[in-house]
Length: 438
Image 1 (spheres, rainbow, N blue to C red):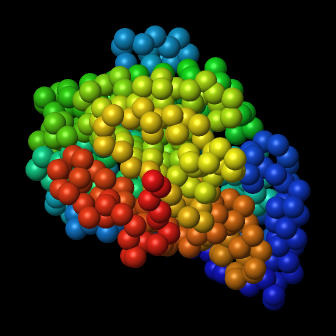
Image 2: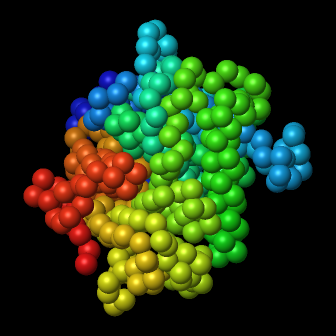
């Protein structure tokens, strides 16, 4: 990690503070990407600048971790833009490992993906930071590359990221579930989210400045649902002893024995939450779903309602919202009619939680990434509080991450493992920031 440079003793730090303050005041991109461009400085302007590596929160479960990436080709969906002529996907498995030995720890992101995500935040999203601030390519996870999977049957949970977001920006949630005995399968959705294929082939996805319209959202949800169902088919092939990797790369040892496909759940952030609900509607193999602050309609204010919001589900479903989403009062900010309609239509077990003091991005790794980045560059300057509130809300990052992990795990423990969870029965004094919405 870079050496902290206090604001009060460094003229370059003062310049950084000035630029960030101006960017926060004038750059509405912090809240609505693509609306404005804040001025920024480049690394050559500051000889003390170093890219910042991040510390991922340690997983709370007892399992050591492994991870592997798999390149999949869907022969049933044409895509003339791809070398194969068919739809191609990259997924990652995060899982309980055995005999990790000296296998290296996985990096947070592949190199080209890391550059793309950094460019988006320091450029089009207008964070007023120098290019190269986010050192995702050299940040280490807690998972060993291609370590053997623990040869016990583990419940499987799919994950779909937010609009334009890489599958890697919810790694802390994936690793925590894996440390508790789950196999978590994170998916990139090609042509929308940035994705890097073997050999360095890279597709950037939707430009950071492009806001989705209802037609785009509808098609994206349908595509993501088809992706999820295809991935489930490939997991069935793996469990049957086959290897669907497009390059024929070896899968981790004991992966076939480690998948319990009788117990499948899914969760997603933002658009991934919408895709999660829609996947449960279309595929009964998925037994439970969780939506992290994602609307269930094609336009948050104008609609139309998604089919799942109109019909509800038979499977258990959890709505987990920030301060920006609520379903109980149409006269207050953050009202989402799709959540209200879904709540009425839902036939299966249901729960609505609200994480106080947060904005939507708090349900990703950016909750702690931004906190570490700004403190590394700006020391303890008070401007950090304003920037964090604009980006992820005012909740304490460490407590927010811990609360999310506990409730996500409790939900899947109860619905997939059939373990009754006291935490899901009502407000807990241990997590006062999590409110049960009646």
